[in-house]
Figure 1 (tube, rainbow, N blue to C red):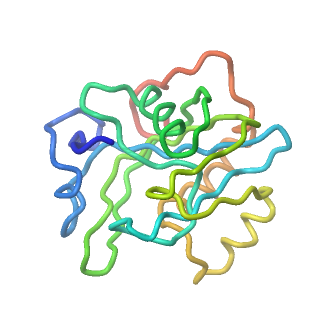
Figure 2 (cartoon, rainbow, N blue to C red; figure 1 turned 60 degrees about the vertical axis):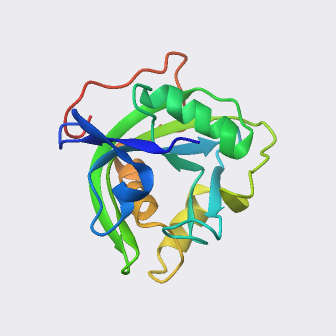
Length: 189
């Protein structure tokens, strides 16, 4: 478990390092993060319910894995590491794009992240770590889209922001390539 996050500017250039908790307090500080969408061979997506002890959005549903790279760690290495640590799944990830978002969680804190969105494919048995994940479910794209249509459904804001863009701009995002590389830095990569 990492305790520091990488602070970045809007172009994803590192400008410092900060305690993970401190980066999420108040309005939050812009830091590097990632979200992995795990898909099985039947085209279903793994959703996880965040553990009850999470500081932000506890009990909310989100994509398979969301976290932060450690200082000096690549996004792809961090994403594969966290899939193993949180879900017991060994899978290579492929980068799709990244975006900046800012979401407040009441008076507790905020996510202010430059979030790299990745995809991985696996049919391995999932073994969630209870400190991170309280529940999981496999859903089709249509089932997820239907649930997200309900504005009060308990989904994390970053997942809601990513889903429509994945469907519209990356229709083949469930087809990981053999070579997993990050796209060049830049908006909408």
